[in-house]
Length: 302
Image (cartoon, rainbow, N blue to C red):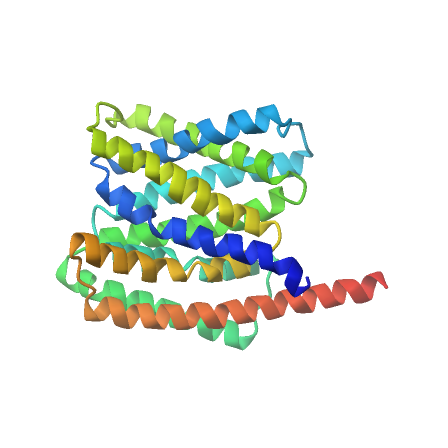
């Protein structure tokens, strides 16, 4: 893709990262259970995109493979938000967001298991760096009995969103952007609402500040943030998109320090440096693999 052709998706992706980086802040400001926050985030976003998809005829049927990929993406998105938002109840914003943005590592691992990615030794070294960084962040909590649960939930959210990126890219080979997000958000919202009802989680009667935080979470972090990332995914690779999200923990940590006076501990800072370095190396390895595959495909077609 020429530079001019990449300018628009890169700009959208930059705005998306800015929107997503505020997700943890809005979730922390919402005085509600994590499962209810996740459900409202996707439900409110669905109320915006579903009427648009219906109005523009974007819900027409596609192949079974594409439809199943969209369903899987929606379920994985629900799992991601349920796990990650819950992690904020047990650990700091900085720790949670740094760990959840290890998604590129899990994109590489899952892609390798599915035969979609081949990593050079440098890629596996990058994965090792990220795992070491995660250990540095979580290690003190494991030893002291602190926020290990929050760290584990954040990592679970990272694995879920990595699988989501792979499923979303597969679905969007056939389904257009608006049709895909309407499906994924709607399915994810239904799954989370079902979980709220099954667990008896309180999901109404909130004070005005909580409703404002939930609306901001849906509009800014979900529609602008995740929506922009999904649109960019149609033009950029899952590896590139996931690596671009490394800006999220930095912005989120700064905002949490400013708004909530949350300190960034030495272990979080040191582990974060290792993870960010690993993500950059992993991104380079994944992009190199994709270029090799594209070159091979072009040679095969010629």
